[in-house]
Image (cartoon, rainbow, N blue to C red; front, side):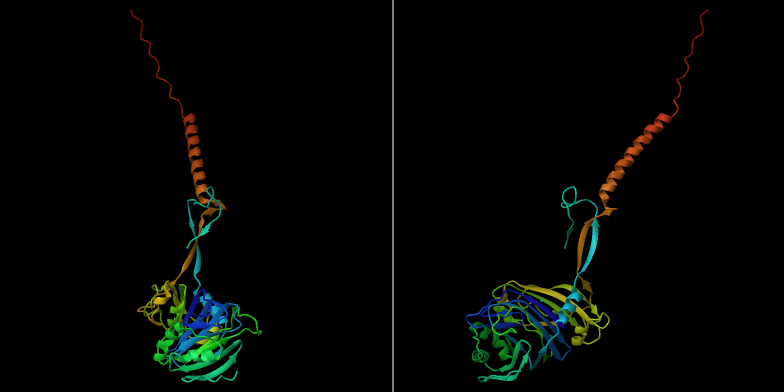
Length: 362
């Protein structure tokens, strides 16, 4: 099971957005501010629950996602993302330091912290429309394609223009005989621009490996950030970097959805315990992305949790400990000096030896 968080600034007419591509008409603009996807895999079937946050002036748009096999589509549960964020959140701990720092008195003031159903239109061969349904604000079409330009033809017939760059980027999926989920995004009120967070969609399809489609992200014009939350029997890691920097882990541990409880997560993964791995990857040059992410088990299930420390000045009774210590030390020195003086005053004075008068001379 995997969850990804993709954040970027993606402006129309057509750009990559994480595991898919967004397309609008020539005169419209749209930005995908955030894409969150939860992906689960049991060894045979993969599930992706994805949610988009969009903004722009486009009254509608098309979102295209390649999948390795025939997919079914339904509305997802937004609560799933709330639970996953809670599971992988870092632990916050407080620790103290003794000597004052730049922002502490007498230098400054405050403490500081350290530290992702309508009737189908006629399709031009060789595109096949294998399903079409209306799900909330989505008009979802499930397509097959045997030619790199076939998807472009279908989009054109449905009011969208597909740039050559995206058609070329789709070629490897066509060669591997992948299929597509094409989603027409439209606001609830007709004529209103697309804005805000859309309802999540849940996709299911057969897959013999845990794969997250990332190849289309190479079309992005700006650096991309990807957060992956992997839930499986063991701790997971990407098989390769696929053109980005090495992924860094921020959480790894076993979770029991039924014990917490995390109902939305249990609805996707079942009631049994799962191992959660959260990782982050950065793509400074998206054009270098050369494949899809495949995740595999690590050699050991080593647990890890990110800790954010809030460092504060050590105090005793609201008074800085260093001040109490120095004041106490100074007071001790003064007391010791007074005691020494007092002791000296009380010490008996030894009288001088008597002066012996010599006897008179005779």
